Length: 215
Image: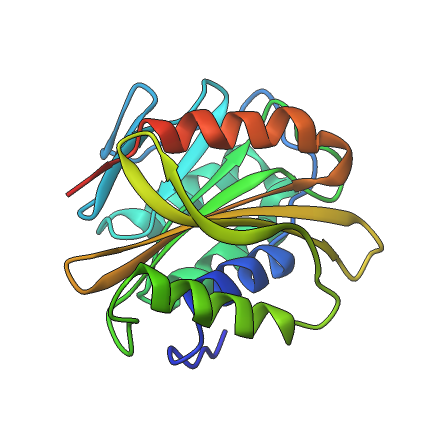
């Protein structure tokens, strides 16, 4: 996945999710990342909680590849997803990929990716908002569901909005994106689900973001 980092984090967080699908997950899915304590995710830039049933792959871990291999060994139907996540991980700006194994369906699992950009970062949240609006307006196949605006969520303020996309296999997806500027970096949380799951999934995304602790 060749990415020009002068593009915005929201833009790439959404595109990455479109390319990474998932066969239906089984009850045997495992989580091998040491950064996860229960449902608590701890990254260098932020920590937050995910619901039970989410499987988390921390791309910053030295044992990321081994964890992915162990997961595929237990879930061979997820090979295509694993290859997509590995491709994301080769771009060091991606920090995390997590999927909802409980509500997964054939062909796709609702998911989250976290992307951190350190180059060509907007100076402030208002500039990030302008960049996001401009770039998403040019994103092929995107329909704005909820306009991107600055929004307080929990103890932080994010650029937040929702778009509808179609995957190549005809599925309607909703991406729910939250971005922030922190210590000269842009951090974007992109939650993406099958459109029929949107009501419950966006509520889960909001609860997750309300508990985000930026570092």
